[in-house]
Every structure is written in structure tokens, then in C-alpha cells.
Length: 315
Ligand code: MLT
Image 1 (cartoon, rainbow, N blue to C red):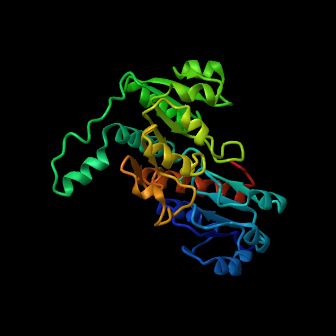
Image 2 (cartoon, protein in one colour):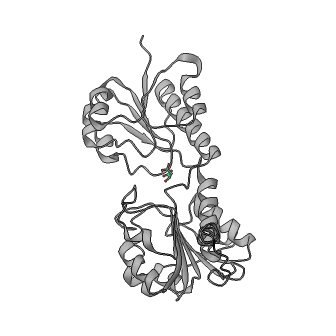
Image 3 (cartoon, rainbow, N blue to C red):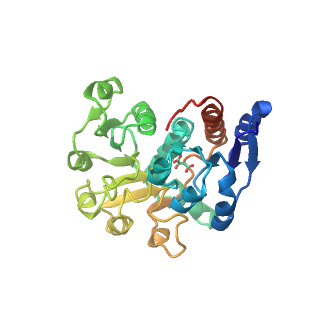
């Protein structure tokens, strides 16, 4: 009997590839950087597809994937997979929700500290030959109020770190129970409109859906405390970028840090690139050795379980 065939179409950690190949019961092909037409031409051969965020498993790919049983996303968001089209064809879409939690929380927390202390701007200034200590006076996190929008795995890890820094932590999440909030030592706030005006810092940790799109729009940004600092390491589109640009220019928002954008890669001409009080990183939340190994092994184990014993996890 022929072995189930797996296509790894985006770079995953070698340990993940090794886990897929472990015991020789799967036929594993690694082809990174396929053009859309090249993927369409070969996808029909495969029973499983492993992606990160680069490969787009859109409706055309799903239609051509006549033998596909499972798509594994090495990461959390499945924005690059047409889940509805896959589900209609009976293809299971899995993600790896646990593997990059700590890395993303640490990146978001680092960006929050950077917005408080202007670290990247000060670094650039010193490297340009200056010694300017006045421009970069910051604020402490201690005794400040942090609003966490989304208290899933990553939001929860942010809360633990913020509490250790002496912050008051407010949480908004429609799925967070009062007892869970108490056990995490955070104050549950029932609506965005109530939490936003209280915060010195806001960090977003929600998926992008029709309900969450532009949750921070011009109207809500106008309701923030003047001088709020905002971090987004979740998904572009949660914040209306055009409205954020205006709020940063007017200093309603003192500083912000974005790791994710409405369009990725960020267009060269984006007005976000020109703001001195905005820190930008290129979607690095999960870019650590540990997270990539974690999601690589997790996705491989899930694909093996699905193809070899019909066991479905994180679908
Ligand atoms: C995720 O959804 O897991 C993160 O955004 C990181 C990634 O895209 O790999």
C-alpha cells in the first residue's frame, strides 16, 4: 500500500520535518516558495499540506486538492487558508495554538516596554552620532493601567508579566468568566467602550473577524486617555491604521508598536513608516527558535495522528 503523501510548503523547523518522517510511514516532500500555479499543479498528489503564513490555501488550491485530507498550519491564525472551502470538501484544517504563546507574549511585552522608554528611537539616535537624553524621557509601567483586549493564551501570559511589573490589569474578552478573571488577578471589564478610556497601555490579542475588524477605530481612539500607548502583535486590521496615524500625529496616542499590519509585507509607501512615535517590527511575534520548533513539532504530530490513526486535534 502506498504511503500517505505530505507536502510541506512553508519553512518549518527541521525537528518538525524529522517528526513527519519519523518511522518512515509518511512520504514527505518539502517544497518551499512554490508559485501559486506550481502549487496548483502538484497539490492533487498530496494527502496533507503543511503551511505557515506564506502559502495561500485558497479556494482554487482546495478545488485542485482532490486527495487532500488535512491542512496543518504551523502557527495560530488560519487567515491564509480558506477554511469554508476546505470544510465543504471535507478537508480538516488544524492549527497549533500552544507552540508560540510565550514568544508572542514576550514580543508584545518587549514592544510595550519599548513604547514606554523609546528604546528603538534612542538606539537609532545614538547610532546616528547624537547624544540626546532629553527627547527620550519615558514613563514607568509600574502603577499604570494596562487594558488587555483578548484574554486567550497570549493575553493571559501578558497579564502575568504585567502583574509582575506592578501594573493594574484590566481585561476585555467576551469569553472570559468572572471566576477565571479573579484567578488571573485581572479586572474583567464588560465592554470596549468602558475599558478603553481607563488604560495607560492597550495591547490587543484577538483574532481578526468581522466583529473585531477595526475594534480600535477613529471613534474609539478618540475615547482613549490622552497619551495612551498601544501595542498590536495579534492581527493587522484590528486597528484602523489610517485612524492610528492621525492619533499618533495629534499625540492622542503617545506611542504605538505594531508587529502586524492590514497589508503584509507593509507597503514601502505606507504612512506608518514615517512616524517617530511608532515602532514597527515585521510580524516577528512567533519568530524565535523555541516557538518555531514548538509549532513545527506540534503540526507534525497532529498530521501524523490524523493520517495514520484518524485522530483529529486542534481542528
Ligand atoms: C500566528 O498566527 O501563529 C502568528 O501570527 C505567527 C505566524 O504567522 O507564524
